[in-house]
Length: 256
Ligand SMILES: [Zn+2]
Image (cartoon, rainbow, N blue to C red; front, side, top):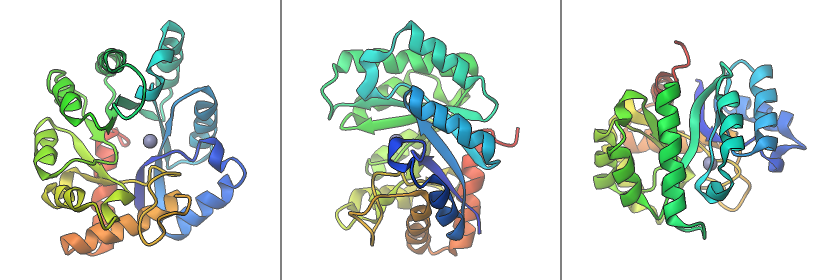
């Protein structure tokens, strides 16, 4: 089977010394496609090197809400320049993170600016939400998001929120969090998500799925999240791998 890890940071410093092995281990567990999400110049440089070298790796770049205060004209220029690359398929991760110290008002402004840019460039969005789901929803609802599409990365809301974001035309991507014993609501969200809007991801190096929680996450581990969800949905993993890969390729317009 072929699995698409729709959100990973192997372009980050955590992986710089064993990148090749990380990609080999992913392949060994059938994780063959990945979206490499970058957030600054260094991770973008590494992302561009990797997506140029490997045909089934793709890139994304956005100003993460934690870095909202560094969004200026120069960053926007860099963003536009990077997003022009044919294998950079999404603007993100962008959104709101009320867990961090950055001013909420500033986060919302930077989020809205980048949504407008995604519309201008006709690129889907990758959304990061932490402790801010209601505001995140309100902003996306006012932004005609259906036109460009987008992925709720590591979706962490309950079934009711899942239905609301689905109504906006978003895809929901589930990380290792869905395998955690205490993530009952996220499991319920994954169960109500129609198969054609379901994606899987690692968010490596974070959010390692069970039974490996505590270890550093890497793309290979998408396999365990996929198998967990397949079991919950009563599907063969191969089938769910095929569906989630098609979904990722559709929203990211990979074969267009
Ligand atoms: Zn991320």
